[in-house]
Length: 630
Image (cartoon, rainbow, N blue to C red; front, side, top):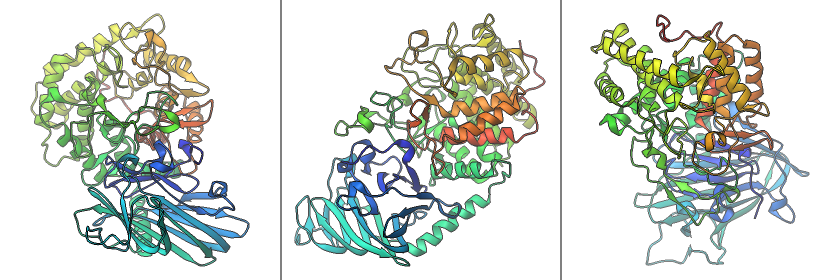
């Protein structure tokens, strides 16, 4: 078994319906078909090669485990086409990996191009459906297996037969593999060995479709390559950001777009499940869903870089997902707005670095998190301010959300970070409740929509007073994680960002300094101290530094006037990315390792918004600069 691949060694390809993770040594270790949240057919990421993978790399003598490491990889021509260069003693090849924009079926295309000399290559493909649990029925040729003729069918046997077309079926799933070179079936594995010389091109195309549907036409690899590069190049051309970090912003937007589910406009938190926040521990969650908490930050990033179509699609997903009983508002939904995301475990998978359990679904969807009402209202307000509503169909929904918020803002909740401990009066949650009510007042005042502005204004004042009275520690000159807490929380950095207090307020400045002092570890920021106040999250173990929070600190330092320090910190955070710009959820400065699910939309959005803030001449004004709060 090959050694575990570090999380930061992976790159992403995708087709806006699903995505694959490719290791630095040329192995696709994660792929769910046909959607991001479908069961994986390659799940080596969470177990080992027997759980499914597809490795394509130079052949080593005598063992593939000794294959050379690539000398370079990057996305080709500003696209999501991954080009990996392999230099060997006998020659050099490039491997191009990509998924064309979805047509009638999902395709994964891998093209080997000879650069110089000659290189012996090998391909090893193990399809294992249902997260590594199910071996498919595999046969040569393009036909489907039938009960009348199994001459070319192999299911875990030692039979070896050469073919350039292979079909695999397992229950609802069917996969067709086409290659320019012979492939061999044996013991549940599809292998190929071939030699590539300078100027040669050898292509593999893996195509997936539901097993009850007709076999699709496979993508033509070279036409698909041109189309894929053009699609992504055209998309990036729409970016309006031209500041000093243009390349970094564009790369992050590229990956953020790859996390978008095109049919609905929903944007995933990450492409993976169960990559650990604490290696060997239980902090392993499924992030292949859409979080409402991301709405405001994502809209800021998209609108700030010119992607109004994507912002509008995200806003429309948001309205559809939260429509209904406001008391049933969830923190997250499925790609299509599905509310039920039951959490289960997959005991047959060992977990990444033995981090168990491996989970699908997410029980946090059932938590009560007060801040999502404010984040939803704030996101819809931003959309309206940007002119994304030609007809305001969401105002009635916002009325209902506000009515519910008015009667429940005083209740304790699980907080932004989905604490699985007791509910508390989290300061950030109350601040976001204020923000939601505040945006409603502004909507009435600025857009002339119907609503009890005076009543809402009085409610906003009550919430504001409550936070300043109970969530602020005057002795330490800082807001605290929750009422009566001694602990801090990086989300407190968002207090001025949402306009609760101006950047110049001494309480804001004190909070920024306190958070930086108490939560910074080896130059990076924790989201909170899991050992403070008796362990607020209710889970064993600890976690590393939260990457998005570092970008929040960049914005906060810039906001309080420390712009040189903000720019320096931003440049330091950029070094956390891997060679293709990927950022996961967390970073361990002791080991320089990424932790948590990847690529993480929250981290990518944090980078974009911090770059936008640093590119401004002055801090953004508070949403209600005319309000005098106490």
